[in-house]
Image (cartoon, rainbow, N blue to C red; front, top):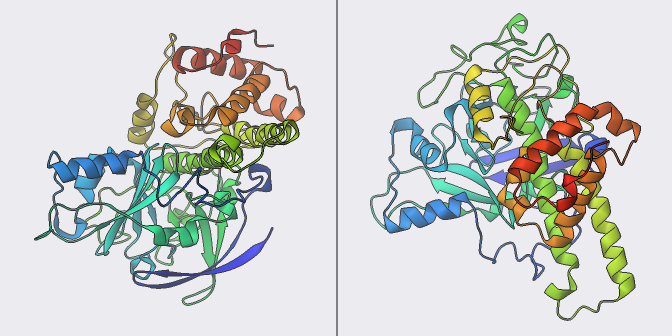
Length: 432
């Protein structure tokens, strides 16, 4: 495990962090190319995401945002981005652009779905939004938290300053999302931040976060507040009474939502990385580059290797167990399950399990995302091929047999056959 120290200059001060990489089993290589490669052009190429669509509606007047007291534009932005209140996550660690305003008495609120994540700090200067772009990975925006009196309607502005922290080995070398569990020894001390994903044991998760709901007796690092009795930290039902509630949307930071967020942050980063690797290696997108059969073979081998990493994560092969089961809020669980497409038998990749693993049918619902659909053929083809190799039983390695029963694999294939429009024809084959 490698330790690193970062000093991040935000709008309101300095946050000093020392962080270590997360589970090695869930992380492979990182993108080594340039984000300004002509095939990528992260800062200059057109974008395609929900915030870009929202900005167009704000500009033509078909949408207006309402400023409301200490919440500012929060509720209007949530409504416009289709971010549900029950997705609210609360964290008091000072790991954001507005770190100086965050703490136990004023936690940061995050809201998310499978297209965007929004960060709000009460009395902050801006609302922060990270949108999952079809081609560019995570694109960062800020919205000024002040009523517009002149100069036209409010707009979400590209925030390239975020790249100072959001392009690291923990994001696989691409602009991505970070999900940290933090600890510190006291005020003004060095903060240690460990990247979390679905492979992180629960005992190491959620330092610096508030966690509501039950974890079936499993210990975690959440709710470590001086004002909170240690006996209440494990199965906290509500954050009522922990801080003054003005401006906040809910009194929960649901454990089910936290688990979903832990999965999808790294899944989004993996999709970005494989897409960027394919584009950076494509000689047709680099006119001056010479191509040869040997070079093409090397690229194909590289893409198969990255595809294997993507598929392992997509199928939750190294997911940490949920001992004893988890109790999420009924509101989040039912809404999340209702979002995804269903097969002829009514099954969906959005259904939560939470008794021993996150999903009832362990295959990432981000297979339906615009970013997956927009993958270049040289990335999508090996992902589909490897996905079928595992689901069909062609790879009978111990890791796969332990993670996925034949019933799991059969159910996932049947769901994909009915719900994934560009599924290759060979998915009609037999599951062994």
